[in-house]
Length: 442
Image (cartoon, rainbow, N blue to C red; front, side, top):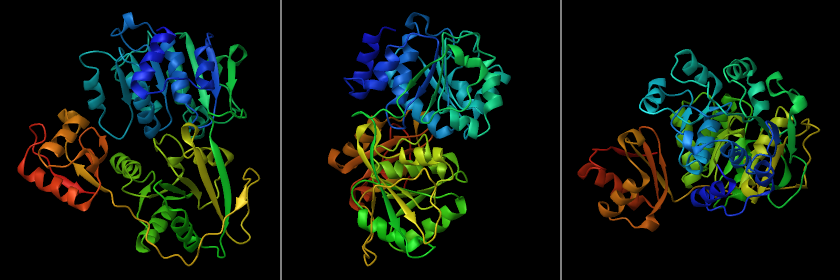
């Protein structure tokens, strides 16, 4: 594709009319091997999407996969899919990842093969072993968050996949931190590195990092005071190191008037998707999460990243902080430090912050999130839900908030309890696009 056409499609899909420096750098890259280093939230996905589309021929769409993007987690694969699909109009884009039946993915490509695949390594290997996809015509291979893929033990799987790819025009590795190890299949001697990790400019995140002293080793009271002190219309993520800690902290916050939800690897895919939607919609102001939330989450406007536990590695520190200050916005990071607690060398704070320990206000929201038991497989769209809510329930556009469409469910945020009640009652009396649906509050 020509760059002019790519820019036009980006503008239509995202309202972005000017590329940032990272995106301009990849757009002008004409080599075959690329290592792209850039902070989380800097527009890196769109940057490598441009390089990918420049190497694809729309006239050959429909003849089998031309581009493959590997991601280390389901969440990141889904986020990448939602970035690439609307920009890559004219190409069929699909996402392969665990957490749902492989047969659902096979049915997507049964009538026409995919042109662009976004996949986790394990699920893609399942497709290769079952001969449900063929990479013999691949032109572009991108491995996103390569350092995280190594950390999660995907090295052999990625190498196995790379050997199924017959010398593509472009192989690119991306990372938010410099790489210690470059795989043989990218040929490091021939690779060009585009490095924005230490380049200050107006498009990269601006973060203020504050230390929050806790008078006790158990930081729960300090965390609650902090959340009450900084509460605004923007949500916060509280990062912890263990699932059990996340459960304990979440229970404490909810028992003390702070509305929160959990996000960790012990939850199933739908539970995690609902938690992210609740945060994005404003229905839940606080997410208590492990480092699984450090990458791949599409949080639209996070107010603060809070380190309840010290991050175990510098990479975890970088990626936790990268959830805030995305797309050039400013962000705030808080590190809660207990008495005599060891602070890693890579943590450098700008100021101390002392929350009001006497505050007792609840941290809540007026937004209600509703679960609808029909989704994409039922041919339900956001427009269908908006039309149904307005025409059948009598709601206004101003009463409707964030809408998420899942494979077999949808989530609708509304701005009041009355609006939520009217939607629930409407579901009992009318159909949503010829479907009887059940609506329940989250």
